Structure formats: structure tokens, C-alpha cells
Image: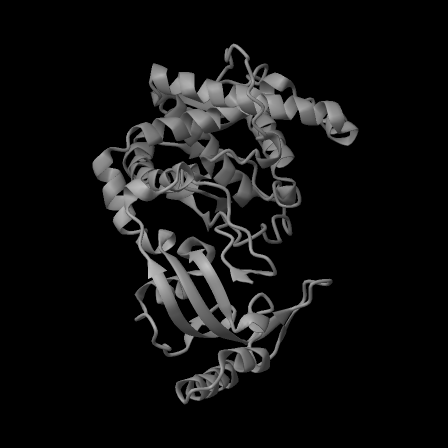
Length: 372
């Protein structure tokens, strides 16, 4: 299937803070924790070492940054190979400073909610530590305490809850207007003509067709469909989408958020019952027919969907903070310069720092293929 994964986009500078939505994926199992929530926003015993960043309201030492990076890598093992790259460290350092500043702005009510969330997440963390010896040993090796985990989580959660608390009903309504395609539910048929193919074993990508060849093939199948061709037969013959080719290219009752962007937009805007012109995505060309579409209103969304809208609304407040407030802090970063030849390589995904809207829900998963 060519679903969108809604994975975190990678951005730089002004949007770094959006990395917040608890990147502690592996630690975020909610277990209904009943802790007192007396967690600190400051790592302990990290006031020594060289100062690597100064800003109007404080400073960050090398020890403090190392602690943050160690916990970050524990949560995101895929980044272990690149976390030593100076440019990547600089982005994460700016992100860390942003969390500290935003957390300091949180109201008492927001901090109470953030600590409640952290208590729940710590329950999952402690269960994992107790059941996974390798994980427990890694914590010991890196000298990461339960308090360090709680601090990391609270910095994230307090920033997120604070930004979400700024969102008004008007903000929600405005954000929803830009997201209607995500929540519209459609029955849609399509035939996909791919340009590339990824080997599931080696992850190597090879070219199947040139762009011109793929477009010509898509136009050919559209012409046959327009002439009354059978979707079932043509999908089996022409489609490269293994998730639908054996059922006439049909996906039923699918929300737009499941699809890659060009397909989602076409599914939302294309006239019902009409076979549209080929639509290009990262996968190739899609020939699409929308058989049924149902729009949702804001008050019809699930709580998870409303959280997605709130996240999009809070995004504007994040941008405002980063573009208007952060410059006033006069942040100066003094990380050691990279040695010659160091810092080469690429971070996972697009090579920038991971971000996500504050109240985003879980990523939608594709069955067979994921959008890049």
C-alpha cells in the first residue's frame, strides 16, 4: 500500500522545537502511573564542564548537553550514528534550549498536566527496564537515571502542553479548514504505475521505468478505463500497488490522512465518479476514480483527530515563539569545531532535526509501501 506514514518531517532552526511530541516512543507506554509528579525540569549534577551555549536566561554546559543527547539517543537509536556530527548537535542544542524556555513559560495547570503525563510514561519506562536486561544495562553504562528520563520527558511534555494551552476554539476551526482532506472518508479506486521499486530485503531502489514511460503507461490505462475497460482486469495487468491490484484498485472507507499528499488532494478534490488525469507522487503515477466521499465536521472528529487539529493550530504559536522570542534570547553556541573529515554522513530521513506538531497522534502505518 502507498500510505503516507505521517512520519516526522525534518526541519531546521525555527521549527526545531516541534520535535516535542514525546520522541520517547519506546518509553511512552501508558500504564496509569500514580506517581506524585515531583519531577525536575533540570538534569542533576551537570553544572560542570565547558559552557557550550549561552542565552539571556541561562547557559548549557557540555555535561548537560551530553546528558540530553544520551537520553535522546536512548529514545531514538537510529540517530546514534549521527549524534556526534557537530551540525546535528547544534540543532539538538537549540531544540533543548527551546524546551527549557517554553517549559518555564508553562502555567501551573499546564505543569500539572505535564507531570501527570510523565508519571504515566515512567510507568512504561520502568516496566521496560525491568523486563529488558539489555536496555537496563545500557542505562547503567550511560549512567542514565530514572530522574534523567523524567526530566527529559517533562521538558518535552511541558513545552507541548503549554503550546496546546494557547489554542482557542477559533484557532481549531481555522486549522481544521486547512485539514479537511485529512479527515474526509472515501471509497477510491486507483491504478499505480511506478517509476522505481525498492527491494524489501536490501532496501535498494532500482528504476522500473523513466518518468516519461510511466506517464505514458498511466495515460494508456486511463484511456482503456474511459473506453469502458474493466477495473479488475486492468488493475491486475497495470497496477504496481500490491495492496489493491487484486481487488480492482479499490480502497474503501479510507481517510485522506492515510495517503501521500498528491493522492490525498486528488481524492478530496476530484469529481466523484470521474476518472481523473494521472496524478504524480513519489511512487509514480496514479489513475484515480473516487466512488464515494464523505466530509467530516470538526465536532464529528475523534479525540485523536481533534488532537491532530490542535497540533496544527499550536504550530503557529511555535513558529511565533521561534521567530519572535528566540532571537531575543541572543543564543550563542560554542560547540567544539569538527576535525577535518568529521561530520560527514547523513542523518536518518531528510537530514534535519525531527519535528512534529504538538498534539499529533500516532503515525498512520502503510501495509506494504511507505511514502518517502
